[in-house]
Image 1: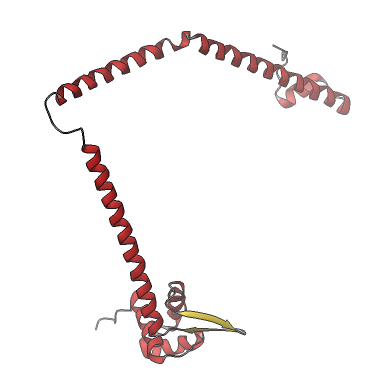
Image 2 (image 1 turned 90 degrees about the vertical axis):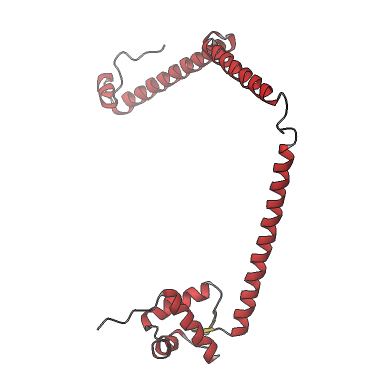
Length: 204
């Protein structure tokens, strides 16, 4: 004998909604966990998750009164919810139709002046030749870019900045070493070894 197949999550949701519509009453979660298995075949362990998913989708209302949370749902609310959803979808559909028509118009406008005609192929071929020539010239310019005076000036400025920065950091290292020697009475060789400072470190 084959085992009875359990309800899917969507089937459980439908069963719980049927329960609310039939009873037309307010329930606490514990009450639903008792009624659900008996009347709708939804196991008590699943009732909480199913109810919460319906609350999240605004199909069931909930309100905390004192220390208790009550749940309810009426067919009239479901009808208005579905109507609102239909209105939203229709508005989105109308918006999509407008954007589609606008795109079609832009496409038609873009075709103007590109119709097939005498000389068009020759013009396109000439355009392709000119674009290829332009790309070749750009490649040649790039080859000689290293000789560009502006580029050379930028490189010189960059070298000077790097030179100044290196000397500034060297000066900082010497200052820290002097402080360590005065504070902890350490030798240069000990500090250099401890912090990986070259023995021949000097200004550029």
